Image 1 (tube, one colour):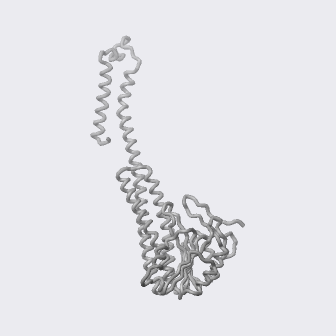
Image 2 (cartoon, rainbow, N blue to C red; image 1 turned 90 degrees about the vertical axis):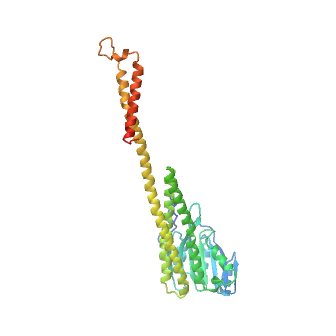
Image 3 (cartoon, helix red, strand yellow; image 1 turned 120 degrees about the vertical axis):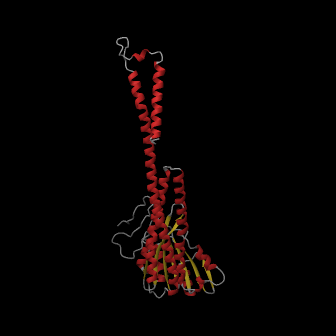
Length: 364
């Protein structure tokens, strides 16, 4: 049976799914997924160590020697490695399946010995490409899964390495999980603020000088705002689920900090909604200005045509083939010595009078 997957179109995220009829918890690697690599950070109130590259045996040893361990798995191409890692920490098979099958909706699930959180981070500033991040945490461990190298966790790593009173090393693993989730949420704000600055710039440019290319920029920004909303709205529900949980490995003190993260998500959603309404209004304004420009052109062409209609009429009359020698009624003006200058002068006078009349009526 072939694997089902959706096609990436118009910048939309490609979603990988398990084959139809597969057993729950079946892990099938995406052919485009990069190989999996593991790193580990272990910590205690007395100190910490960072291991840039580890294997499963190293993780078993470190897990037994240190009170808290953070394992970071980059790349989802090696499902056997991911499955073995899940066995070490007794991770639920359904949660591992959601980890490998990218494109999941942001959520939080609770199992007997651990919690599983799905969220998204922007890993490409230019294209606003999103990366699914899975966070497992339980008593004494945190495991993160990312699709590609590069994540928003550097501030957390620096806090772990900081000297002096270190809250991350002194507290339990659930606080580290909170810090990682909060880092992902905070990583949205620079992109949201940059989007707001771009909206303001386009608005100023539209007022100063309307251009056709501005509409494409507005649609691109609108697409980015829809993506923000798509991942932030369910993330709010996911964090709310963490706050409602009574799992023993999630302490009440950590929930206080998670409540602050929830406020950040709500603030980001409100900003995104405001920007989205602003962009919608700018798109309507751009279309109205385009219609106004078209109307100006039509009005100008109509006025020019109206001025030349009587002139064309006169030229047509004087251009008819009449012979004044046959009858005095056959265009005697054709024999005038100043007939040609008189005709041009009369046409110019009529044109000027019509122009002044249109200006007086404010049609020009």
